Image 1 (tube, rainbow, N blue to C red):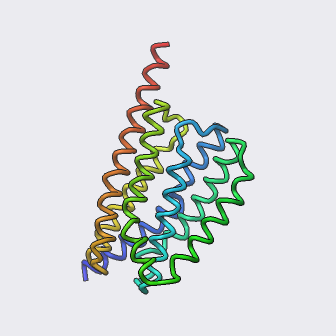
Image 2 (cartoon, one colour):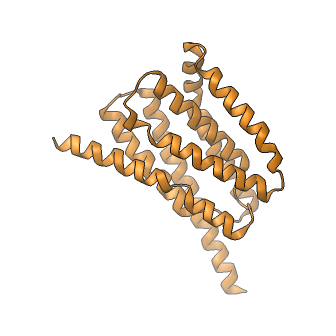
Length: 206
């Protein structure tokens, strides 16, 4: 009974957090009208990972509460992508990205082996998205336009999903993905804190 309650809390808190997860980052970009420190490659890889993951879960009829947040996250990532393209002056490329993502999504379910292969690569794709963001931060040394709140919430949702996956499907591939994502999200979060603190210290000295 207690485990069922904890499972419901984990599922619904994850869904609630994911409903607003990207909004802090969206608001930061809209206020700054700059994408410094925010990696486009990271966002694109994250979108690919999300699409593969939710398609895999639906293909194998996993319980909807275990992946319900992903369509919401995909919608928010699309909004974020459009903002980044807009501020980078390349909004026209959105048509190309849309065509590639929709075509890729359709291809995933053509054959069982395709979705299985894609899922086996999903952890590497999602990990690559985090490393792309880290690389962007290391290169720019500026986290002013990166939302620590978004990365903090992302870390929480992955921790919650480690628990829900363990007590529901027990899928090892999915579990490994969430463990890796938790560690990498935390790494990005700490890096954001480091550069934001460093920037604040520099401004005080000036």
